Structures are given as C-alpha cells and as structure tokens.
Image 1 (cartoon, rainbow, N blue to C red):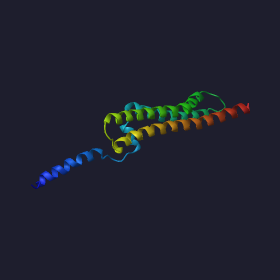
Image 2 (tube, rainbow, N blue to C red):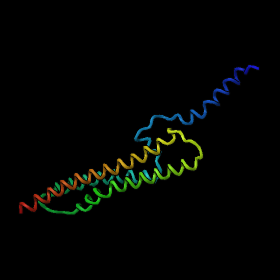
Image 3 (cartoon, helix red, strand yellow):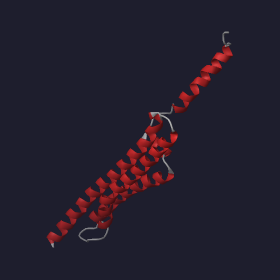
Image 4 (cartoon, rainbow, N blue to C red):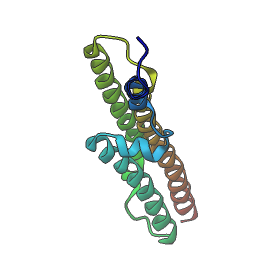
Length: 152
C-alpha cells in the first residue's frame, strides 16, 4: 500500500530530526567560550586578564624610571603558572569528556566530541599564551633591572 503524501513528508521530517540535532553552526572561538562550563569560562577569563595584567605591570615598571618597584613576582609566577593552570583545565575538560563517552554506552559522533576537544585546546592555548607573555615581560623587566643596577 503506497504512503500518502502527508505520511511521506512526516516520515522524512522525523528521519531528519536526529541529523538536525547534530547540525550546528560552525565552531568558532567565541562559541567554544560560550558553550564552556562556568568554571572553565572563569579560568579562561583569568588567564586572559593575567596576561593583560603582566603587560600593564611591565609597562608601569618601564615608565617608573630608575626606581625598582614591585611586580616582578607576579610576572615570574605567571610565566610558570600560566601553562600549568591551562594544562590543568584542559586535563579536567578531557577527563569529564572521557567519562561522558564511557557513560554514553555507544559510539559518539565526532561532531558531539569536537566542542569539548576545542574547549580543552583553547584552555591549553590560553595557558601557553599567558606563559609566553609572562616570559617576555620577565625578560623585559630583568633587562631593565640589569641596566639599572649596572649603571649605578
């Protein structure tokens, strides 16, 4: 018995629903950040703010003239701690993703896994970025301290 036109359309719509559930807009950095857990958003924001603060501290140290004022410890801590914090966040996101895969019970499509992997990669990238900014700012501060000490 042939299906009516309305039944055929209903079957096609129902067959397309699972595909539509996975069809998302393109993955971008802003969508990775927007879809992240609140704790991971806070960690990403903290890494960005810390890198910007290191630049500000370095600029203030350079603008202070021959005075040797504080801020070096923050920059030094950032160059070592930034990558570790980013790595810790990435490892946590991956751990939670692997637990989710194990609990799913069946094969999980890559389109479902990709945002989690992108979030972990973004966390690690921001940690490395904060560390690189910390290293460069530390070099600048140390060079200024060396020049100040050697000139006196």
